[in-house]
Image 1 (cartoon, one colour):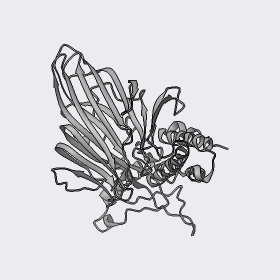
Image 2: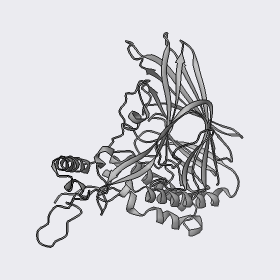
Image 3: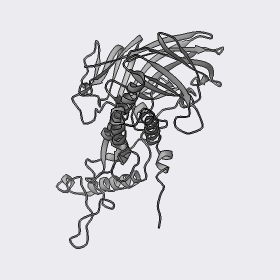
Image 4: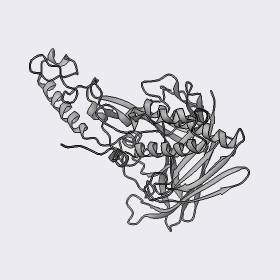
Length: 423
């Protein structure tokens, strides 16, 4: 017999591991509070449903709506347990701990309003952002991984296109679904039959080079476009993505201030040597608010001019697949051709915009100190289902791009103020 081991899913998919470790953390909080229905026990049990703690032939962790529901119940259980401890007052706390059990500490920030989980060792990025009021994890986005069944799809689509090229016009209008002939009257097995819900799905097979967290720091050449960025066909000029940052925290009566810093390098096209650059991002989390203010400082510590583009990447999950009319982008001063959350587009000279989902009662407003170019695109994966291979919306990537020209010793400062509200 051949078989696997469930814990391999925790290694293969960071998203499963993070969800599992979140469940364990909430479990400890609920049981510390007494493990009663009033302190979140029932919602904890609901969040332990197995569906998105694995991945198989049909969905698993790739089912975004189920993934979101698991986090909804985890946050609901967490709310009940914390209310038993803190009551109705405003509170904040932070902890450096090995949350994901990889031997490196993460920074966990929790409060009555929001939770922010930060990974200093992987780019100083934000990998969980829970809104306690709407009970939604804004960042439960799925990375686009390479899967073994993708090769089956590629071969099938290549063969289909080859056959269609040689077919007559009448035959080329045949349905996209293909079911191999079966012996006798036995129906086709979903484990061996190749079906697709739309043609040319292999063109959507993209493998991400890094995890789809938020606060990812890119330095990009002028030639990088929205399309090449979305398709992961670009080179990083800097060495900041998924690299270690230092983390410092200060807390006072106003709130928490987190400073993430890295001394790295940025390559210059055509130059022999890179430019040393210090990047610092400071997060301020005011007490009692659904607010996160990010202040950036980028300093040219070299002797030569640095001319590049800096991009701050954020990835959000707001149940926006299938052109859900409850999930949206709104950009102040601009009329978008498509405002759906799973839309794709580029907007220049952006200073204020909002994303949200009316059904979730959650809106996030972004205010920028410096106008930027906004890129947005739907993150889609190809997975199997009983009906065949299909596209699945996993979230939306929004990236803010600024041109930088820094002489030796010069710095650039920018601010992104994010404020959540009910709608």
